[in-house]
Image (cartoon, rainbow, N blue to C red; front, side, top):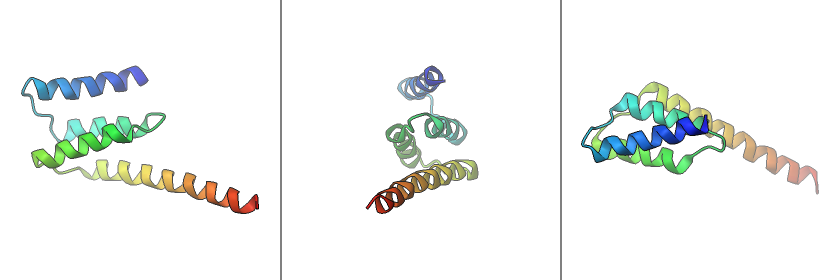
Length: 89
């Protein structure tokens, strides 16, 4: 799977270098893959979001759901760490 995510990132960058503009669907699929990668590839996800903003592309509902899902997951992991530290005192 990691190889496929790397390939998708290279394709995204190559498209831009060749003058082909990725659309909202392309950006959404790529960001979903990056958010599901282990570990989460947040910097590259932010790169995709910045591209979308620069190009005036609007994220889809599915993309927002993916972003909210990872935010929830990260918050839960952070809260587990806080609870474990408090319990360990």
